[in-house]
Length: 255
Image 1 (cartoon, rainbow, N blue to C red):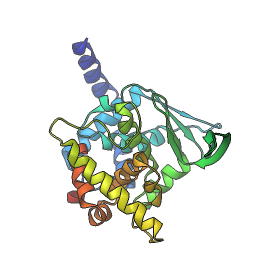
Image 2 (cartoon, one colour; image 1 turned 30 degrees about the vertical axis):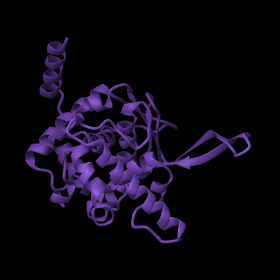
Image 3 (tube, helix red, strand yellow; image 1 turned 90 degrees about the vertical axis):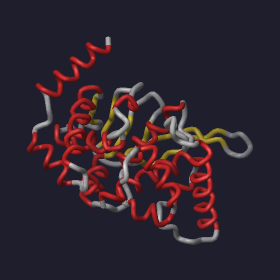
């Protein structure tokens, strides 16, 4: 079956590639792609092409998802797996795109066990074995804003990588040459440091949402890794070093 899959992949890349003009427009729009080599840009285009055939991108609330919108989202998602491969996104099939922020209601259990509904407005959400949900307003704003340290696409797709071990806990499946204790020490230390700074009312250089739990910390520092690696390196160099091993990329060198 693998030879059949390879044959289909070659067919898609040869007969249904993303148009070069459209591709250049998407990459020139986002500072997140600056510094990629010609080889990396070409490989990212291939991954994005295959992503769009393997996943279904649908609009919610009557939003029509144009091909350029789809490419803009898919290219950012594929940047995370540029060196890892699309298999890291196996096990789910849909990206749902809302025009703007969307409201969700989740059950919340208080200290005495009473369950209540808690409604929040979100710009993105990832479900285990389910879809990635995004706000197009936020996607478009962030891609145009440049290196702000924020990317809802990077954030939610980082959650998907984290979930590869069965749940989002800030510990994605590590590569065979990575040392689990090094990862744990770097992330646990940085997470605790961030919580302490917030407890003492210090304004951190990174999004305070990272202090919510280890899963959110991993997603937020992944945003920084790709959009503002200078800040991540300055704040938590050990975390940056672990992410270079995990993503097998060094965005700081590109910047």
